[in-house]
Length: 186
Length: 196
Image (cartoon, rainbow over all chains, first blue to last red; front, side, top):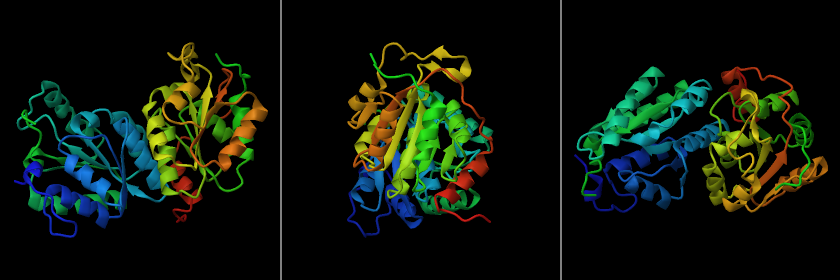
């Protein structure tokens, strides 16, 4: 389907239907303005466009759990946030999910760029990817793997609203079928 | 390395709380740091961590970014800070002037049996903070100096970090471990929500 790197940059306000544009618009529509991230190759166009949009406060953190702490504090202070990361970064979050996001009932919104499947070239990435859903399931955390562009907006928008209204975290896993993923030649 | 007086965590926490007149937020790090915050007298603007070791500063940063007109204090132990040193650079890059970081340094993991931290005899937290980009970082020489640094942080135009050497005494209270109630009351205290 839509492969980010193959798309030209659409001007703001145009009907850009790339996956990253849909994610950005969903964040905006749900008043999510604080977006700390640990970068990932696939997330590059999204990160670039978040930086270019004055609505967002977006910045890199040193670790994924740091970003989770930041958006948790911001939520309690009345500001909505979301965290961007890749699969290997999610693997560092079990402790903060189990001791902060879940027990304190914080609507943590995570976007995880999925490495380790559909053409992965790094064995470690494919191994760590297999730990992600078991960790999410063990904490009974809502998660969706998004593979289709035509389902992205619905899943993202509804999941954000559910996280906020039920005060529970959600992980939105961006599969290579949606984003194009990262391949060996990149 | 540090010619500073060894002080007491509860005493310093009580002095800090005594200075808060404008509903300042206070984030208490894991273990004894939040036990003494609790013991100094619960305030609706206090948040107590029950896990997620090392995240007192990131959580406080989030509060500071959400409410830029409120001073936000974070109390963190030296062992906890070692788990998340990168957060110092993140904070330095964002420059939230309303964020005040206090590091309680006793060189040990007091709560687990007083084992020395790997940094105890070799590293200087204030030097690490300055090296991470937080120029407004200082050791408090004694209690009076601590109070002076807190006063200065109240009107600082950049993030402040105050490090204190403390003794090996445990916290004098025990926080009620009710995470939902802690979070909800904190949100009431910050004016984000009303009670049901």
